[in-house]
Image (cartoon, rainbow, N blue to C red; front, side, top):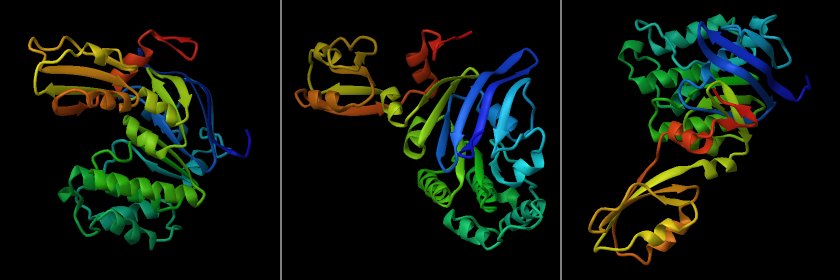
Length: 309
């Protein structure tokens, strides 16, 4: 394994009884990059991350994390890793400061504690609040702080912005970019295309336990689906809209031609320009779920030369 590779998996398989979670996952993440792991819920993202930390063991396959085998040296891997699980369980009776002190002690109290108030301030997190009084979003902030405070070589983050409002999401993005600029490798999972597109340098797309594509973020633009609900001031013939590249009508227009729903793959620029010739009264945009996007792009059941089940 090259010194420039931070994470590597080959042929990773994992089943929970009859449920197959991973079906031969191959990943390669270079040191010092932000790598997005994109997929719908249940695709295998969390299972992969847990295997990397030896929290669970795969049925077969090879893993290397920072040059180490996590099964042979799990303590060594975790000592150099900041980890945010998808579901962080915290002692409800402790204050935030006490929880973070506990995480620090688990690491042998070797980290710089002065990082903690700085991180908390940036996330508007009160260190004196009891955990039982925290909202879901504020508990997520505790998880982000505990992952970042060791200034680890590797960050493994499972849905890091889950439950955060848009302003806090942007703040977390800035903090991850800063960690990367400081030399850390960031590997994060998400089911939000726009988040991965904005943050990651490379993206692996997982579906049903298989990597179906490894892409540059620009590829995600082409995968973006939008539905536009268009209302007109008077009856119109909407047929010309369906002839625009990437645009399709979703169902039939209403009888009087006053309303239509269209689906757009990729950029909406052509459609917006075409609509300038129509008497548009109102325009509403809807983003389909990632699962719907995947069904649109991988509905043949084949991706990357593999047969789907």
